[in-house]
Length: 285
Image (cartoon, rainbow, N blue to C red; front, side):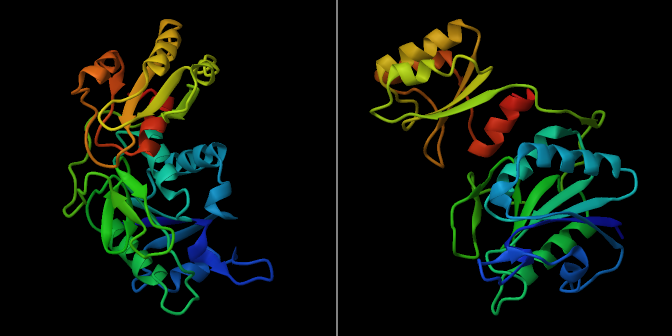
């Protein structure tokens, strides 16, 4: 049986009512009482915050915490708010290279203390997953295990909450990765820009102090020629430019003559926006 460290970061799952609204107050000891099987689960309370205010400094501290404990535990569970859960999963997936221990993130749309909550089933799914096999970095939500590199939040109310953008979910344990485990830290400034018909070239050119750009293009690769020309200026200055479709599903293929110019950029498919940004930041892509 795996020895598990559960790290709590607050979020809706840990909330109780207050005069100002829901506030994360439940400790890890409070949370684990809702698990069907508490054996071999140690608790570490990391933060009690809303995940929308979690910073990358927090995420790096979390990655370093997991790294320091890698020889003491077989798996890690992180309880987390849903607003930025997919960002934290992507960050950890990129920061902890060839990591050979499971990291499961889970949270809920309703607090543990609420009637009809989804938190209890999600928590128990995370515990069961952490106990058996290697699952990489993944989300345990609404009966599904979603890989970190494809997880996307698409629902603010419903219990389903997240999907894998390629609709591929984890159903059996993964092969443990080869190679030496390493912790890497983000070292590139990455800009994210969304192509719209009224996006002006001069706005694009203001990104010239970044190291990398992630550009969300129209359909299979579309943008205005003036926009393309502005990105070419940035590219000539040494910026690497990655392109990804604004559509949740489908590839960047530049099938049309009007799109042919974007073939000079680096297409990224079958990955969430969250993961692409961090992968560029960490030098994974």
